[in-house]
Image (tube, rainbow, N blue to C red; front, side):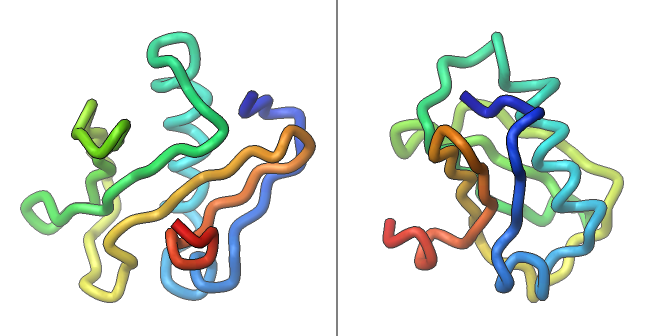
Length: 102
């Protein structure tokens, strides 16, 4: 699950609201900070948080905050409040919860 050699995408709403670097950072967090550290299902949830003007990613599992990951990217109020990453087994996509019907 969440094999970095599988196809990875971002939905239009994610691509149109988040900078490329912030999207790439989600994949980085999954590959380097979540894999082999946390048990992962095929659906990962991040809340996007304003941390003193910078973007932080709150990793949410079972509706509880598990970990916070800071980034060097400036926060923008136009960012979605949360995003989900779904792995179908063949492809992975970053989307908003409403796009995945959560």
